[in-house]
Image (cartoon, rainbow, N blue to C red; front, side, top):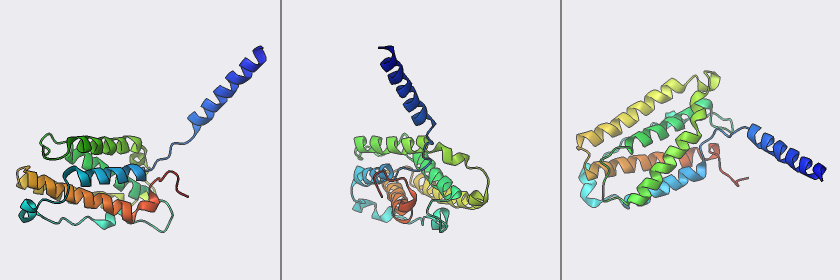
Length: 191
């Protein structure tokens, strides 16, 4: 009787040890990012017509996510996506978000962005190498981009329309990541 218990215990231990020692994928979850994009799109609906006079177009720096010909996002590209998520989290961490927005969808969006950041912290630790040598250039472009978004928000005194402009810009940023870099995100159940 002791042998089956010992074998079962040993099997459980080996299974735990195997799972515990498996490397954690250090990638942004594509399905979660897509869900965040959909939530942000739906949180306020279409861009309000009363805000058209406030509409500004701040061009996303595509070079911040330029990839090499390798089938995985380079170390600096992964760090750039991580930096984008941190900036989005910072923007939407404000306390003066529009009350007109669907608060449940907004909460879900914020939770997904936070979860993505938390689960991909490992990319921020990529060592300086050939893959990350261009990261300072990417980071500088992103700093300017998100600085411009924040400046537009402040210039319009955090008004509802200013937040709609921010929502539009961040939505376009997420769409850019999903369309231009979808092969580099972790997509469960894709072959």
